[in-house]
Each structure stands twice: as structure tokens, then as C-alpha cells.
Image (tube, rainbow, N blue to C red; front, side, top):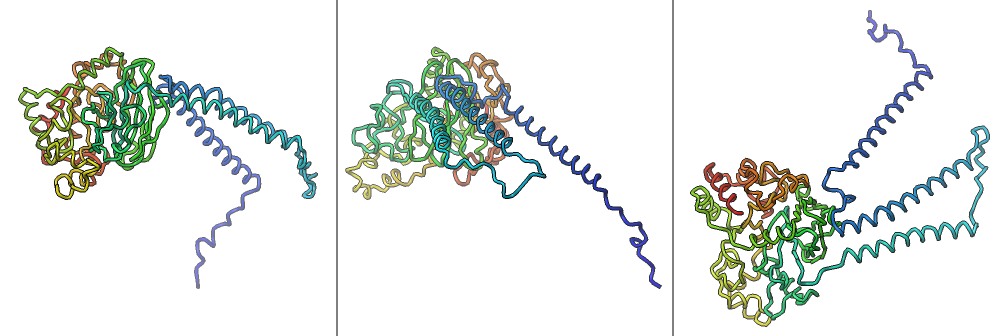
Length: 484
């Protein structure tokens, strides 16, 4: 005899009553509605933070104020008008054409307004008026944003590279390029472009070696418009300091122009807004605006060469730096000079060419002779774009951030906020009033790719140095602290 299964002995499960199904559906709808409401409220609260640095609607300069003045009364106002108008029409149509379920007839269509000339002309003209109301102030705003200083004013070249920013100050007012092709003309020296051939050479061969070079932190005088020339060494980036101006794409091989201006002293944070690889989200910008007299003092210090340290630990760190870091990084221990005065310098003259050989490598009318000079051929055509492209560390200790502005060189400084000058009003004395961030600098030197996603094998970022001993890194950190 076959025994029955236990499931056969169990009483049948009763079907849920229809009212129970309705109650379950109602509970589910209420839960979903609550979750959706909470999500919307959380999103709104997050977007209303007033203490975050990346806020376009807190302008701190004339250029950013132009954008804010355009957005608030015009864009937001017209958006509000369009939203209210469209919603009102939709509600009116819904009310006008509603029917009771028992009166619904598939063949009973709502009143058709096709052929109503007045109505069709109206909803054609009204959008045109709205677009015109947006277009006119927008075009005027664009013209204002593009206004530049005279060529003799402060000009800075901004160069994006995975994943940090380089800033080059035109110290002598002759443009950012040397006479790369030897034709006696300079690009940008007249403020109107000049010789375009100079800027077609790879950046590291054509840039003016007399310009002041800093990295990661742009320092400007408050109340002065600073004109920027932007380009990239590798991929497309986007430069954005929201409290000082809008976004401007930075494209390799092209030179865009932009301007920033801060009303008063302060720190202003920005972010790369064009996806650029592994550490796109960690490629930040830092701009510090100082009073004019303080900026003059900062600038005078920056163009001076670094001092050779006398402290035993720092001197040992300098030796470690020259043996392990100087192939990429620069600590300038001489005055800013022309190339011809730097024969034998491994940074600007890696092939130890004479001035005559250097000019030969760049001269248009002598390119046919390059085949007779293998060193000149190598220097002019084989140096990769990544060559020499690492942060200049000459006055490293005067900056507040490093590693693409994601880490602070000083323990008490938060690289993520704009309160630097509130906490340390004397920016020039930062190295004297704040503690050197030895732990983070040590971690960075020992294994930078562990601290920030990079691709050092492809010359994109700083490699690790597992061969350095603890004493070597300690001495190197001590040496960096002397670069003020």
C-alpha cells in the first residue's frame, strides 16, 4: 500500500479575498510613494548645501557673476514660466475633456482644434519669443565672458595632463612660446596670435623656458582679471572653477582662451569635468587669490631659484631626489634663462646640444640638413610628449596641495574646502604656521599608484619607489620642506 504524501494531507491554502488583495496593493503603493518622496527630499536637501565649494550660484568674481545674472532672472525665470504655462494648459485640457466612465465612448473624440489659425500662430510665435528672450542675453553674456585684457596684463597658460594641472606665467610678456622654428617671430607676443608655426611644435620643445612654472595651485591677485590660454598634453580635459567662471574644454593640439577674476582674497576649488581616464574624479583645481601686494611678494619669491639646503637630512634628501626624481621633476637652482644659456643642463638640453645644433633642429629652411645631425633629429622628433611633463617642484612647500590637488602638504589644511585663508590668513607663511604633512607625503613617495589610480608604465603618473629605504624617504620629505 502506498502511503499518501504529507502535502496531500495538508489542508488547501485558501485563496486571498479580493479585499485583501486590494489592501496589499495599497500598502505596496504607499511604501513606494514613501520611498520616492524620501528620495526626492534627500536629493533636494543635498543640492541645497550652502557650504560646498562647487557651487555655480555663489559667484565670487565678475565672470561668474555674469553667468549667475544670466541664469537667475532669464533662464530660471523663463523655465518657470514655461513650466507653469505647460502645466496649466495640460490641467485645463484634462478638465475640459474628462468624462465619466459610464459615459465613455470610443468614437466620441475631443473637440479638434486643427485649422484654428489664431491658435496655431500663437503657439508658433510664443516659443520664438521665449527663445529670443534667452538668446539675446546669452549672446551678450558670451561676449562679456570673452573680453580679454591688453597683452601686457597678467597671462597664464593652463596645461592639463592626466591627472594634474600645470600653470605657466608669462614673466617677460613675450608670449608662451620661444621662436621654435627660428623665423624671428613669436606666437602670442603681439596679443593677436603672431607666428602660428611656433605652437605647432610639441609643447616641451616650443614652450618658453623663461616662463614661471608651477603645478596644482594657481595663485592670482584679487581684483585683477587673469587671462588663461588652455591646452592639454594628452586627452581632453575641462577646466572649471565654478565660483570664478564657467567651464572651458582643454583639447590637445588646440589653444582655448578663458579668464578668471576673484573679487577678494580666498581659495576656490574646481574639478575636471571631462572624463579623462583612471583618476578623472581625482583631478582637481585649486586657485588662491591674494591681495596685490601679497601676490607681488609671492611672485617675486617664485621666480627665484631654490636654495641648496645645508641641513644634513635635507641635503641627503636632495641627493636622493637627483638620483630618483630629477628625470621627471624639476627643482630649478638657477635663474630663468634662455635655452642657449643652459648648455649642459639635463632638463632643457637632454642631448647636450650646442645652441647652433639646437637652432638647426628647429629652423624651417635647414630641415634638409637634419639628416646630417643624428642628435638634432632625435631631439627634434623623437622626444615623446610625456617627456619632462611632471610637476615643477622648485617652490613645492609654498603650495597647499599636491597630487592633482587631492592631498594637502600641511596636516591642518583640508584640500576639499575653500577655508584656507580663513584658517591661515598669511598664505605666504604657510610653511611656518602649519605642520608638514609627513605621513601623507611618505605614503605618496613610497607608492603613489596606491594613493591615486595612475598608469606609470605608460608614462601616465608617478611610479612607486619600493627600492627607497625609510631613511631615504624621510630625507626626501625633509628636502621638499626646504623648497619654499
